[in-house]
Length: 380
View 1 (cartoon, one colour):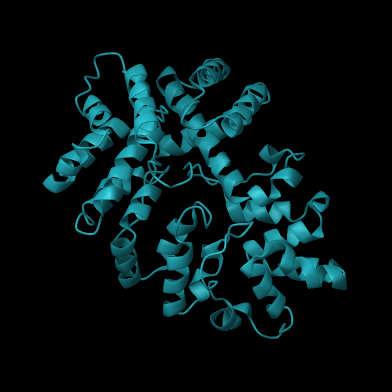
View 2 (cartoon, one colour):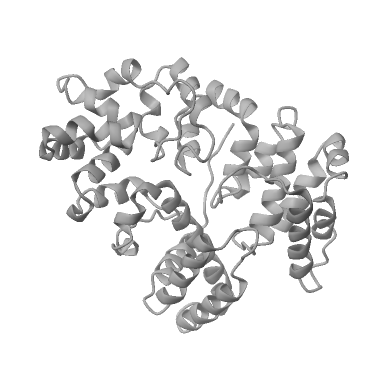
């Protein structure tokens, strides 16, 4: 299973401009207003269409003098992708939210050329900010397995703080590093197989672990145990599964794909991996449960098309996904409320205005009539 991708030079240039544009001081007040609305309003009721249109208009004006007209829309559309990437980063670091709220995070976030946050570099910058406090910085360093920073911060802590920090945080990585620091002459990678174990049963930790930070140091059996315990998006960092897949051998990737096809496909709906979605989908039809197939249709329809995510042609992707679907999947969907909006998009004539209001109303009707969670995953 090949999960590599290559961005074009044009895409790399557009990403660089979009990140800079998103951080433009002129646009910052409008984006901050949008972020507040995102956190206050329910996803099922508020989409901020009007606010985004205002941002798009102002952003287009800002780049009109130096970005060719043919590329302006691509740059502006990618701002929403950048916005969602930042919101996912916040969700994974929610335990630090209050302390970070007074910090200009835009000046701290480090970006990769592909348009995703370089979380390791960002974490290294954050642990240097003394205003966050030693305990918070240590928790962050332990989460990212920043060995040098952990040692420095640990030496700054009082004996009492060292005694209670794990009890306060409930984080397995903090407990692990507490043991490592007592055995300084032994590399942590040698201790991982003995001391890094998933908790018995599931207890929600106040801070999500970063599985990819230590996945490579685990035994095959422990890797499988950690995956079973933490693979769901609300338990690990948003980009964790992607990086763990890169650390797996071909046999491990195949097992992962057959066991958690829906979670991997959900990950592949995120920038910049969308071009891999159908290639992987065609490998897992025999392993994908009907209910999870339905969830994926919901995600494409309501998180991508309805929210006007234009970083990929999701209408075409939806049509292709439907076309390739086994007949029993299609029969299953015909009895679901999602079938009507699905057909609305499958049969959409692009020469006609986009039926946004109809799709939105279908979604509201679906929520009101079904009263069920359509995916069970946090916003991606």
